[in-house]
Image 1 (cartoon, rainbow, N blue to C red):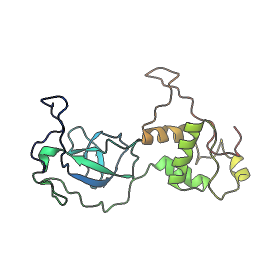
Image 2 (cartoon, rainbow, N blue to C red; image 1 turned 60 degrees about the vertical axis):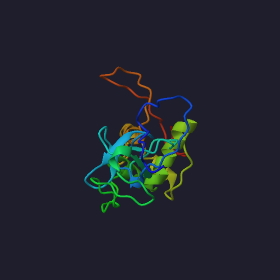
Image 3 (cartoon, rainbow, N blue to C red; image 1 turned 90 degrees about the vertical axis):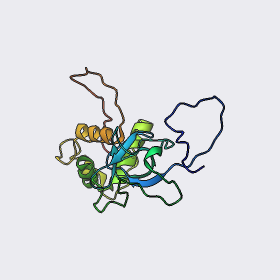
Length: 197
């Protein structure tokens, strides 16, 4: 079938009906974090961002939150692409790759630089800490004893700023021990093994 029925987004007439469809998809870069299946569109830099009136949805089969800077498949609204083939064009959206660098979170970038690790290494370490409830193995080359002396006071690292930024980038929700207007979160105390708790 070549996009003739526009089945998705509509109520099936009968239960148990089987069919197959072609849906236009395009590989895009996330300009902001979003969940699988979330409605999205393109921004001025030709990055995909959450948008309830956008032209498609983020790949609903992804297992985890799609992070800023990651590439993913966007499934396009069926009624907006007139002729779906393996090569297609959208009449109103430019899907050519972005010409600008991915905009990464500045707090996380500064924290990665402080620890002497890459942005990706730091994000993976934070995921490890949250999933395992213990510090991550340190992947960098700095001497941990030198860093640990400044861990709580250095201006480049603020535990609360970092975990708040990480949560906003991953759409993770830490438990709130305060109120809605005055939230209090118990963020992990340490990122890497070798730092005092």
